[in-house]
Amino acid sequence: MAHQDTLHTDFPEPKAEQAQGAHRVWDPFVRIFHWSIVGLFGANALFTSPKHDLHHYIGYTVAGLVAARVLWGVIGTRHARFSDFPPSPSGALTQLSDMANGRRHAHIGHSPLGALMIYNLLATLLVIAGSGWLMTTDAYWGVAWPKEVHEAAVNWAEISVAAHVAAVVFESRRLRVNLARAMITGKKVFTGGRR
Amino acid sequence: MAMASERVSLWTREGALAALILFQAICASFFLVDVLEDIRDTGHFSVLLNVELFANLGLMGAIVVEARVLWAMLRRQAMSDRALSAAQGAMAELMESQFRSWGLTTSEADVASFTIKGFSIAETAELRGSSEATVKSHLNAVYRKAGVSGRAQLVSVFVEELFEGPIGRGAKPQQPGV
Image 1 (spheres, rainbow over the protein chains, first blue to last red):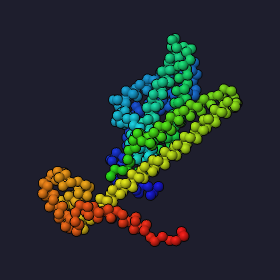
Image 2 (cartoon, each protein chain N blue to C red):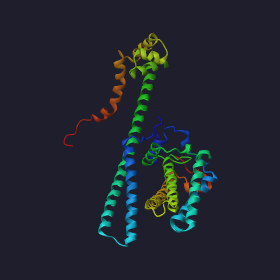
Image 3 (cartoon, rainbow over the protein chains, first blue to last red):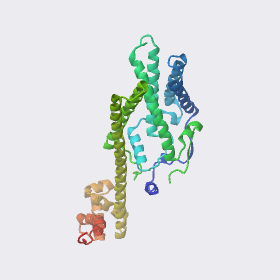
């Protein structure tokens, strides 16, 4: 580890990667959105009965929140904007390469892999809400496929959430940044940095 | 020299492998959910379920193997990038120190490095924004100071230097029977 890091810091790097100290990254909307989705999705996936109105209202709320988040992704604060974390397969591969080579490049905003997860989750939530809504309409009431799509998308969202949580723990330890705390306080605190 | 985090393009073997792993992981996760639901619904294993489960275990095993291969590929790629830049850096350093020891002026050193890189006199003149006559006189000074007869010998000074290390070290007398 020490050997790799020595090699790594022998060369100058782009400014953005020299993350040190505390950075205010997540605005209140992003944080409230995140934890609202956690609560509302968790409630609908685990607790509420799909037959009850509560399940539907929560679903509409999630759809509204995702729509607001998409809007915020265009007009919001710097690190909330989609332009700050465009979907980038090569960026994601580079992040994987960083992991494989023990290079600690902390990202101030979303990391490329994190960005892919965000797009995945936003899209999946919309599919869940859309198919769930179809099941309530007269035209699709009793039709099999909206239900199948709804259930498959929920399964996919649960798997994604598990992967998301595992990745947050892994990256927090690897980069020595408490990412979960940053989503509460809004600040990423880079401890130790790169040595 | 920004090789610390060389970008990895998607259109490489690494990218293709990563995409395949992602695809298989999606398949495996759906398969696994299906198996778990079947077990929950029926409350027991059946032969058919076991076949499904084993097929999925095979898939997941393949994912683990591929992930390890990808990991190794990414490491090897980064290492060769690093070695290449180290070699490039070392070559540039070597040239600079040799030019210093020959006592070349800045312009002469410039012309010498263009020449070693294979540019003709005309090209060098264009790149430096000077006349061919000037380049020629610089080049003659370089050859004189380096004590070489021409371009080929000038290059060979550095080629020799490159070979000296590994070959010199590797050229120990063979020990019989080892």
